[in-house]
Length: 88
Image 1 (cartoon, rainbow, N blue to C red):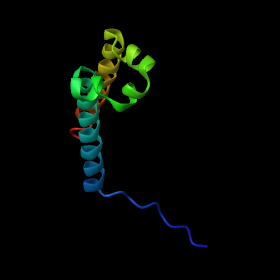
Image 2: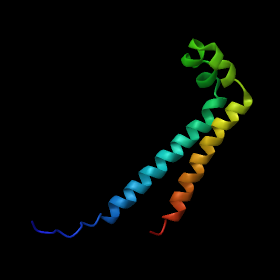
Image 3: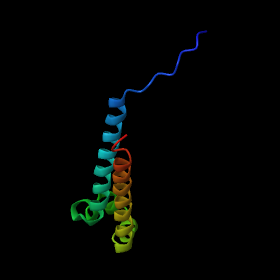
């Protein structure tokens, strides 16, 4: 069996993966930040309509703030990742 040298990943593929990863994280972060404060998505959610007890907790401002905080954390990770690899 011949030993093959490890293949290099093309630079354009690494950059494309970084771009897609950062873009996806930004979109998810924005959606998670916005969702708890959107009446259409949060207040009229079929899951919350089916389970009224869950809707009581979901209507709490602290729960909405925690969910928005997770969205902000996702945005921060995306931007940190983009700036860390901007020259690489």
